[in-house]
Length: 84
Image 1 (cartoon, rainbow, N blue to C red):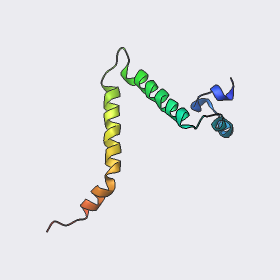
Image 2 (cartoon, helix red, strand yellow):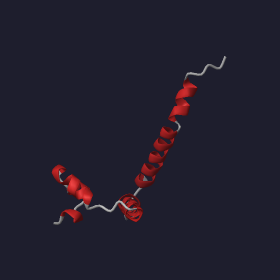
Image 3 (cartoon, helix red, strand yellow):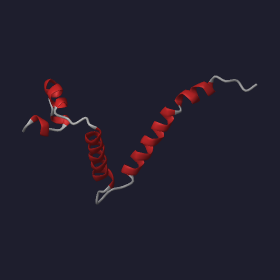
Image 4 (cartoon, rainbow, N blue to C red):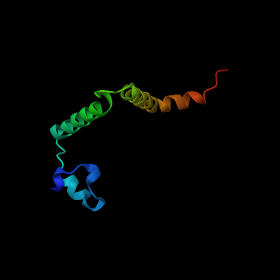
């Protein structure tokens, strides 16, 4: 099919610059991409007929890793402080 209709995983490495040129990088286009990714995540892991707690636990684990990464500098400085 046309290059603009392909997904990122279907694009070859040599076609990547041309594929990126067909993308919409306006704020509206980026917001649409985020909404499409979120709905894809929900459809794959949360809104399934025989789903378990995997989707919610992945989201929770991602939040924990992200919050740890945000406060890592503060935690690292606390490690070397002496309390006596």
